[in-house]
Length: 494
Image (cartoon, rainbow, N blue to C red):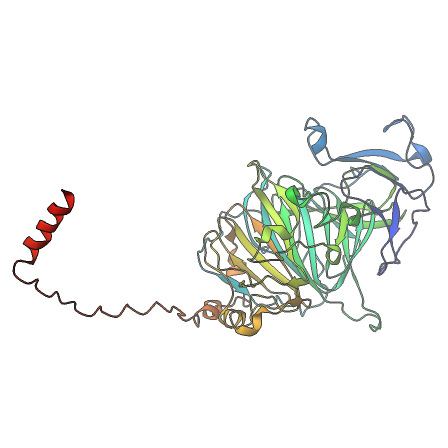
């Protein structure tokens, strides 16, 4: 494990702030045009690519969008580095097997069944780093066509040593569930703990180091586990707020980008390159983290989910889960995302005369759920655990289990309740997911998942049928009465 910094930013990064439980400094804001230097004057002024850069650095642009996209969609950063990233030996397919990592879903399976996985195990063999512990669960679309997504899980016990990963297939949204990660990137460092997330953009080189908890014995394995949402097309952005107004959900100022940090270190370094789901590797003689200064709006970032400001029903009924969207990756269809990242955070439930757990549902979208901590409000059967997952595909019925339903309809369920112990999330996707053979054959899969609903009994209480009406009798009129009535009527008319 390396020290927190080799050469840290020295106060010339704009808008720096420090997280209370973090030893690193960050730049604040979402989608901002940032500028950061680890040495004063490392970024040229007045132009991006001078004939000779300050300190004899190389200028290199990292483009996260086509040159001609609308300006609001443009993503790019300029990096000023000791040696350019092009200085490496040729790439070759990796020497270690990676059958469980893919972007090809032609061999995947579709199923209308509800799927659930018990917590994915931490590897027992030593030396499994983030890349080797990455496994694809499901996905759809095409990395080659830059449209679609993949969902992965990771479980590892070692840091990436003298190696880094660049993902040419898309952006990676990393959700730690167990163990704190230190992400080394070309832009600087991010410390990402459970209840936080990080996004690393397409093409950015990064390494994952595992941070030992305080008090851990030296050299002890550091277990880490979590989830990854990869989007092949549009970058993640904040959802529109609409009638909510100007505030609420995830505040742009709470997103944090790294400050410039570099190391001028000679080493035999391995660069892994993921391209259409395949892994290639090349060697170079120096650390890729040699960027002394940078500026732009295409940067990695982190976000603390505890800062999310949830909106909720305060009178009656249960809102749709889209109200808890943190980030969204748009699709070409207006109002329809390729993928949404949604959380179910601590909050109060106060709706009156309302079934408060999530409603029973069949959805045109697809829902992959994971649990970071606690017990999810819709599952009391003990099968949905931190580090596990579930998948409900398009129009597959799902909802609260039997125990949750029975508890929610009892008389005591009307009092205000604080949902304060759990943090669950959902990757909601448009394209129908194809599940990989490795995920379907995993020993973690819960083949009895369907049984959590089999106890739902009928509570139907139809109204009692109306009692039959008593028979009615009609008395016969006396003879001549009808003639007398008629005569009276004629007389009155006269």
